[in-house]
Length: 124
Image (cartoon, rainbow, N blue to C red):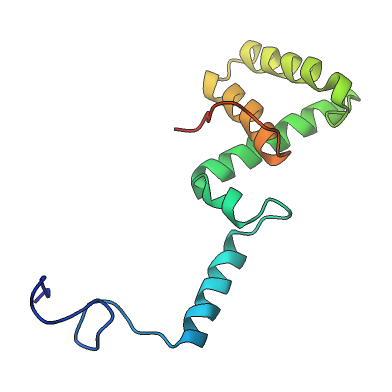
């Protein structure tokens, strides 16, 4: 039976549907959850702004871009060259037959991982 409103049970009560934690247990659980989401210097809130699936796609696509640029002898971390290299990579993906999403994940993933400020959210 599921308790309903007015049944005299509150969430977290011994007869209710939510588990009870001591303060120390709740803090330890929250600390473990934050540690699971921490990726380098990106921080807890930035990691919570997108889903794990999108974060994984961004990471894979951005790493592929960096690997591609490095193999060509380009430095994707050089601000003066970054736009040119990324544009060439998008062209490379197009001519290789990759879908639009591959280019989108590469561009937005590289921006997200490098903490660039963008005007709109690309992930929906």
